[in-house]
Length: 163
Length: 283
Image (cartoon, rainbow over all chains, first blue to last red; front, side, top):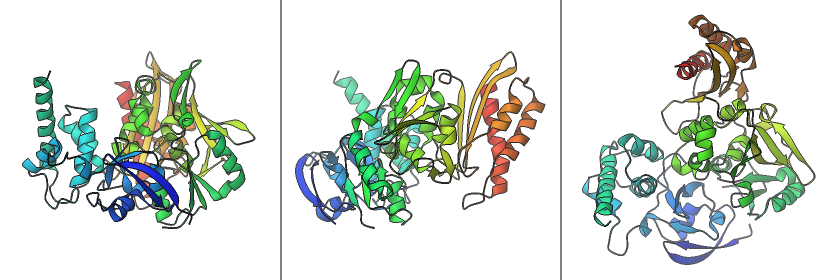
């Protein structure tokens, strides 16, 4: 197979790579870039563990061809924190015991961040609806929903204070 | 995973040129949310993947001369975010909201869902009751295909192997009508539809002025229930009419049994879904 050159930005860093046409984004992230925060769950788009941001929108990296990210911006879970400063969603998950084995967590957090960007004050129903493509086998989701609600409330508080 | 070549053309013209050359060796892809699982499972094996997801001229929602045009490359997320779709084509908006999940919707396209032509394609029933017309192009020809005549069997359409759907057209007399969409699956989210119903209903003084019914996952193709529509048209609404219509729905659907449900259950539940949609729109 003839390799395809691609240029992209990954967590604000510009990178180039030569990829096979049938390489999946998740494999480039995990195997070539050693960004193993993104997890391979089902491989068929049903669990959400492989979620990343592509041009600031959540997509499934197990169903995205590496060749298709040429010229685009990718953010993985590793790109959420700024140095030592965790993202508010990461803090909320950690403080609300929303993490058990942690496998679903990167995907959960990214999807939740996308949710709050679209809808800063979601109801519980809206949270469940938006997060429906992210599966967790450990927690039973209660703490995850609480973490998201807490993060939303805190963000809204902050926005009120900084006006 | 099996090998293939990959090209991402920048224009529709380029796509049509390549399709004319490669014909059935090429596979159009956009979101890849359906295609990649097929390739992984070896259900599809193509020499070349033609990625149309970055072609701007295929991604739009616009009104022109009283008609609504949706580019084939429009994502399901774009449908949800569109004021026109939410307000004037609400049945399609309802469908989009129940489609997969927000993440997949960022990639999946309306054209892809139609071209894959699964009997369970969720956008098909609403588009059927909206009397949608597909604008289909090849290098040599542009033609229009009424969606009613597009599907010929499970995952089979009338598209020639050098053709692509470029847009979906919905005429003015069907937009803005009251519609309701129900999706039934084995779970409340992320389910391949077990049965779906799309219903548009116009009532004048207790009589049915206009009725359009389409269902998915209950026949080899998404289906308009023409016979039930003919039965209901101009009739006065009462409980006996609805029960009679439910019986006729169960006769007109042609379900199979599969991993999700038996044919008998699908036949039975088709009537229930129709009744639920009908009651919702008449209350």
